Image 1 (cartoon, rainbow, N blue to C red):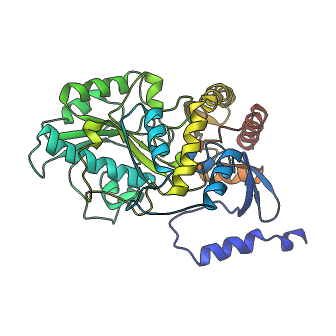
Image 2 (image 1 turned 135 degrees about the vertical axis):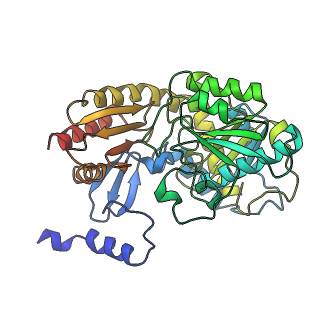
Amino acid sequence: MIEDMLRTPAAVQDAERHTAHNYHPLPVVISSAEGAWVTDVDGRRYLDCLAGYSALNFGHRHPALIAAAHAQLDKLTLTSRAFIHDQFADFCRELAALCGKDLVLPMNTGAEAVETGIKVARKWGYQVKGVPAGQATIVVAEGNFHGRTTTIVSFSTDDDARADFGPYTPGFKIVPYGDLTALADAVDETTVAVLLEPIQGEQGVVVPPTGYLPGVRQLCTERNVLFIADEIQSGLGRTGATFACELEGVVPDMYLLGKALGGGIVPVSAVAADTDVLGVLRPGQHGSTFGGNPLACAVATEVVRLLATGEFQRRSTELGERLHAGLHALIGKGLVAVRGRGLWAGLDIDPALMSGREACERLMERGVLAKDTHGSTIRLAPPLTITAEEIDHAVAQLAAVLAG
């Protein structure tokens, strides 16, 4: 029988046998990819509508990014920051320009960028704002997802991420997302920063009320507090703008970036801010062996240059309108709500029909890959290189799943 010849079941079992079970992946084993499509070990193709949680904004194996990686692999891959390499200045200068900031501090993962932002904010609070030593606080939002380090999960409200990982790091205040009054009440003389996702991705692509981000910006300015925007998922073209904050005309004091910055090839993250903020760091106070390495810088510089053209932001805007129109047409036909911006959407499925996991499994059977979160919600974040026809195909497969 054909089923007996498939490689996927054995490959799934082998992976499960030799790994810690910190993920619950769909039973698909991908072996190659191009653009918006991936192919499994049995030769079946799937439309990738997750794009590595936005790490693959430019699709799989974008030619310009692959060329940059190949060229750098033939020359130099790592020096450590003990030395300067010839790719470093271009990356930092061009990313700073894209962000409209003076300085960039490169790291590797999104969680490292968040940890860096926390450290910088605290040091700024002590050295610039004058907060008494050891008393700095940072205000965050319920439903946040900023990573999974012990410090970051200390201010998570997700039990799966937080439970049994204490003792927890102090110094954080949690307020409801989108509630300016609660935020204002939480900010006091010890507050050094407000750390927010402009759109909460892991929570289900939750968009805050109109006027919330400008209100946060105004409050931070008035109270002499840093506004830190975690744009690790929402940034770099995903929402139809370079940064999601731009959708409401807001400029934070600090950007936290990652995921798409590495082009889906290498892990690259960064913190971008002006000199009066990032300038508080001195040699020896923060760093990373691989942060800002030559290979990472070569790829990430090409990512910045792709974004500088504006092409991907336009694609996200135009194709996002098509995606959301198709999804909104399914409200009342299995969907109860649709949220998002650009090529990013959170869909709430009628829980009487199926769970989010069940929906993703059925989509997988129909050749579309997506990810569930929080019960009956699924997330769609296709590569920004996806075509209109491919969007229509994904929506049609979702409609078929909902119709049973």
